[in-house]
Image (tube, rainbow, N blue to C red):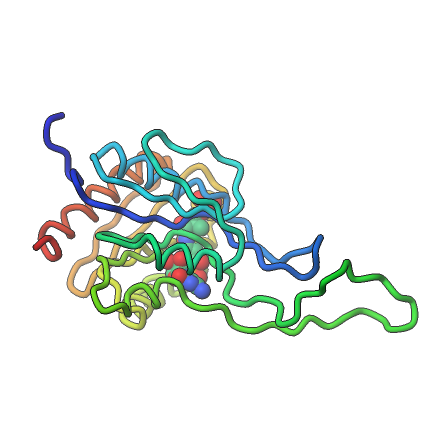
Length: 222
Ligand code: PMT
């Protein structure tokens, strides 16, 4: 097609989990596979966007036409996001909310006399909130992974993080959440609610990119 929805628009997407080290061989993480974020990157590139995909540790091929930057921890992901965010920022990554306060330099040993160790956790920076609080922020789109009161919590995140749109994802249903091939979501803005029925993450990503692009052209493009 000669004109595409996101021609000349720079879209930055985070995907996958983050990995927070405990010692050189152990970490805290979650079950995000990166499928949803990679599908969004693919769909945005198909609409002519210049796409930067910031990926946590996942086992997926880079979609065609996408610039991929691999990261590990939430702090790495934040540093990269701050350097890359431009016109539209989509936070699809399942960022660890906490990291280990004192990462051990050497592999922690199992010792008979001291018993089980206690890990002290500290809060990670909020990537989306930091990006949205910049002087000239991109249009920010968040995801909200919830297991109950999904839309109420999602709306709260929309407001607290000052986002343009939030994608509410009920992850209590294992068919549509972490590591599944399908997803079903509700996208909320301050004054709008759109339901996207269960389908493959690839198909859903195309519809979400269409929705996000429409919102961008209506409210953000100067
Ligand atoms: O990767 P898949 O296996 O395909 O699964 C997709 C998914 C379920 C991971 C995805 O659809 C999803 O819901 N991603 C968001 C997961 C999440 O961590 O949600 P949250 O409600 O905890 O976070 C809210 C938003 O803030 C998210 O956009 C998140 O990227 C962002 N965040 C959270 C914490 C933090 N420290 N920094 C952030 O930017």
